[in-house]
Amino acid sequence: MRFAGKKVLPLLGVLIICGLAVLMSHPASARGASASDRGLDMYFTYPQIIISEGTTSVDVELTFKNTGKQGETVLLDLSDVPEGWKARIKSYAFDVTATRIPAEEQRLTTLTLEPDADMKPGVYKVGVTARTRDGAFEKSETLQVTVRAKEEIKGTVELVSSYPVLQGSTDVSFEFALNITNRTRKEQAFNLLADPPRDWQVNFKPPFKEKYVSSIIMKADENQSVNVEVVPNRFAEAGEYNIPVKVAAGDITAETNLKVIITGTYSLNLGTQSDLLSLEVEKGKPVKFSIYVRNTGSATIQDIGFLSMKPENWEVKFEPETIDSLDHGSTRQVEMTIIPAEESLVGDYALGVRADSKKSSDDIELRVTVKASAAWGWIGIAIIMLVIVGLLGLFMTLGRR
Image 1 (cartoon, rainbow, N blue to C red):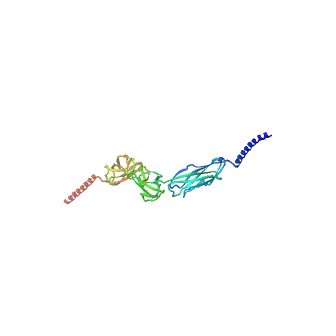
Image 2: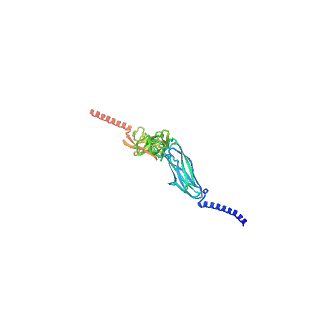
Image 3: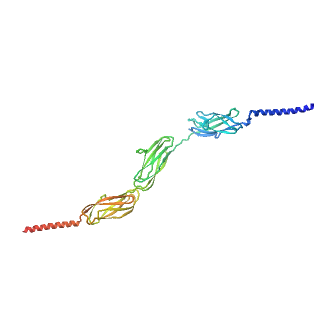
């Protein structure tokens, strides 16, 4: 028995030690997860950023991550916010000061900063601290914001025309609408300039007004409309004409190109060299008379013919009978041959002449005076002389008796 007791005592000690070990581990599991089963992380996607002086708002992504195996409520604090700045943590449309993060998940938020309007260039820092509700875990991060001096921006001016191409003839004026935007940061006086073709006129005027202007004053970021009136050269040929238009304030300029498509005008003018529309003729005898046809339009006129509205039995001829082509501004002489009828009475007659083409026509009316033939004058004189001689002979005969 004594030997058996000596054997039991060591065995009992081993059992006691094992039991204590089990008891020590069991309460820990009863209390919850161990420290190694919890964790918290936090980071900025962009921990260092650069903004320009005058920036009014900045948004930076901020991520919180639960690296443990149980959900955590995380409290959020901001620190070291620069004086005059506003800072808040947002999730969608809400400001947040705490967030619940399930085990092994993360929460994406946004740190929104509103810098002081009078902030100076330099380096600014904003601190964010996250800690669990029981304070067992805490994490801090710092966002570094570098504010750079704003570069002096010269700015620009914009010049746009909604309808930069217009079409018509030279007997009408064209009106374009321009839209000008001052993209500089201060009030500017812009000169209005144009480079039209030779003998064309370009005028600038405000909408719905008839006065002409050569410059406009515009505030920063202001938008104004200006009309451009273009009067083409009356004798401009059919075709396309470019009109560069520019606005300028010093070295700040903008330019656009306007285009006028001239379709051409067709106009004939018929007349005489001295504008005299009368002549004298003798019946039965041909008389030459010159007329002139002029193209006063802006386009070439083709196939011009000539017609006459003459008294009965009269004859009128033209040389040439037709003109194949007459350029704008050109004049051609046409010879008329007028032959009055033999039976025409002495007096005035109307003779109509017409120049005609498919595009234009013109006519004139001539006053033709038919005078007696010179031979009849001599015959009349001879008759008178015979009468006188006869009377003298009669008087002499009667005188002898």
